[in-house]
Each structure stands twice: as C-alpha cells, then as structure tokens.
Image (cartoon, rainbow, N blue to C red; front, side, top):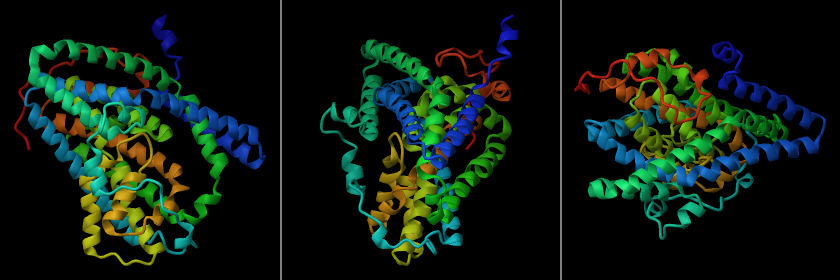
Length: 440
C-alpha cells in the first residue's frame, strides 16, 4: 500500500520544473495583458519565499560552520581533507575564470550595446581588498547577524569551532546544544524548501513580468556569455572532472544533485540551498562528517559562477564600455582575484561585492557596476546553480580521491527521493572499511 501510494508522488525536481513553467506563463500573461495585480502578487510570493530563507541563514551558517569544524575530529586525516578541499576549490575556480576570460575576449560583450559610461552609476557599497580584509573581523557579535554579514559570521563560527576543539570535553555541552540547534534550523528550513515550487512561480513570474525580453536586448551578448560560460563549467568541466578524477558517472552525479541545483537556480541563494546541498552530497556517498564540513565551507567560499565566470566577463564588458584597454597583466589579476577573493561573495544573493572588488583591483570605473545591476537577477539564477553544483562536486571528488566515497550509494543516488526530513538517516554505507588512500 505504502509503495503504491509513493509511486504517485511527484518528484521534488518535477515540482520545481512545474513551478518554472507556471511562473513563465503567469509572468508572460502579466506583462502582455498589463495585469499589475498579478505582477504584484508574483513579486510578493517570491519575496516571501526569499524572506523565509533569509530568516534562518545567519544562525544556520554559524552553527553549520561551528559543528562542521568540530565534526572533523571524527574524520581520519582531517587536515588533509580540509587542505585538499581548498585546493580543489582553487583549481576549479581557476578553470572557471579562464573560461570566462576566453569567452569575453572572443565575443566582446561590451561592443555594440549602445550603452555609454553615462548609463552607469556608482553603487552605494563597493568592495576593496582593505574592506575585505578588515571586514572579516566583526566589531561586535550582534551586528553580523542583524546585517547578515555572512563573512563575519563564518569568522566567528570558525573561531568558536577551533576553540571548542582545543577545549575538548569541556566544550561538549556547547557542541551538543549546537548540534541540536542546527538540527532544529535544518528541520525548519526544510519546510521552507518544500515551498520552493510555489516560490519558483513567484520568482520566475516576477522576473518575466518585470523585465520581459526588452532588457536583455542591450545585454544580449553579455547574458549569453554568462549562461554559456556557466553551462560549459556545469556540463563540460564538472563531468570531465568526475570521469577523470573521481572515476564516477557524471550522469549519476546530476541525477543525485539536481534538486539542489534547481533550487539554487530559482532561489539565487547558495546559503539558502545549503541544507539541501548537504543532503544530496551525503546521498551521493560522501561521508556525513566530511560533507558537514565541506558543504558549509563551500556555500560561503566556493562560487565558480558568481566569483569566477561573472567577474571575468563583466570586467571585459565594463572596460569596453569605458573604452579602457586591458593587458595580459590585467587578465592575470582577474584570475588572481577570482581564485583568492571568492570568499568576498559570501551572502544570500548577487555578486556585486565580487564585481566591485575586481573592478577596484583593476582600477576600472565603479560606475560599471550600475550598468549591470538591472540585468543581475536574470544572470544570478545560472550563476548560483553553477555555484551549488560545484559545492556538491568538490566533496565527491575529494572523497573519491581519498577512497572515502561510498560507490554503492553514489550509483543509486536519486534526487527524486528527497521528500523526507533533512535529518532522516540514509542507509548505512555498504562498505567503507578500506583505508584512506595516499592519492594526490
């Protein structure tokens, strides 16, 4: 009876896909029939969904990072795993920014747009290396949570986690409480994630109703560049790494990770998607103790879409609009900023901070940011989907290289079975008794 009933459940990915289609239709209807009430309704539905995601983000990030650091003590060769994770973050970021630079140089996205420097405006908030370095350390413990400064929250959580490791047994009551709070937050956020199909209708519908295709006209080449660049990373680079480095079936990876990638596309939030990303990563056979470290770490620092492809193409776009010639040294500088400065993008949505950091490093006019703000929501969907795919990919790669990946779980991972709560335990791995390898 139960299995018969379960067969009629609509998979989570299909629910989001249905929300996408319905959102596009309602957005098109609202725009073409000038139905302002429908546009307003779609906007409210989308904003409410994002607001619910934001509600849990600050405490979720804090407790996820704190618990993930302390969980590393349960993993053999924890320092090795952490360093390999960071190394692969940097390698894939370098590949992504290189692809972005090549696409930008081949297509000249700023040429023939009709845009001029006068169309730009300086953003209220800009990023620089001084701001980035000094902004990591909070001035008090309350403001980072009220202003949702994810980078400062990560800093405080990391300090607390390392201190807890040093204290040992004395910190156990705090760790037990932290794990309980994290489970509570994940449970509550899972309820919000289950509303994603409805939120999708509002977010996509409002984007279509507000922007239509008119805005994309001036930014056609730039928009295509971002989507093509992200698609190359998502569907060419990542599968190639899975096949060659992890010796794993790329199709099976996307089958397991697709719900998180879809949610990232519509929500435009790596951090908001983090609980689902961690769940699909564990379902793909990554040990829970390692996944609970790698995924939160990646959700705040691993941004191939927002911090690599986007700023590379955007810098070339802005330089062409302002008629500024970039040299080889500038392109190398873009690559450096993307690989090292991606943590500056930590937050809910958007990549404005990373873009301003890149432009300020190159000495390009900040008014260039204003040229791209209008089109940003449309670009951010694909960027965030790429971010989240990378955040699930790296733990799989590292686990496979270290002989920790449960190949049986990976082979049977199915994203359509993600209807149970986030803390539902998955089946015990078939065999993970082999020693950690010494592969590079």
